[in-house]
Image: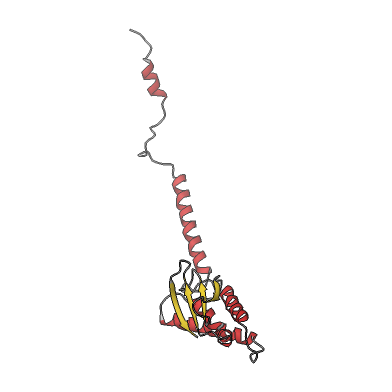
Length: 175
């Protein structure tokens, strides 16, 4: 009989501990994961607590976008501010306004509200302004129309119609 142990026996003796997940961890990795989790949670709480602002308003001018009754007052206040701004800029109210000037005032009000739209005289009725925009249902668009109302009426317009980019009429209003 050989006095040396079999090669298989030597391999078993030199192998390290088993690599299963049931083996107890040293604790340092688990501690780092716990600290990282706590840091992320604290960072999120600090971020949301310090960013301020009202979650019911949009970033463009603070115009309310949800359907609460208080939000309607915010929209009315924004419309009143836009109308006051346009009235304050209009130093020569006694002079007649041309069609181009009225359409330019509406385009300016829309671009200030970041509602880029095509504005032109309606092909069907020369007393109606035709707006083509992807944001016809945005409250800011109606506010911009009200802000340019005086110029539009002075130029002889009696209504405004807003069409989607696909040609669907989404709203029409009389001036």
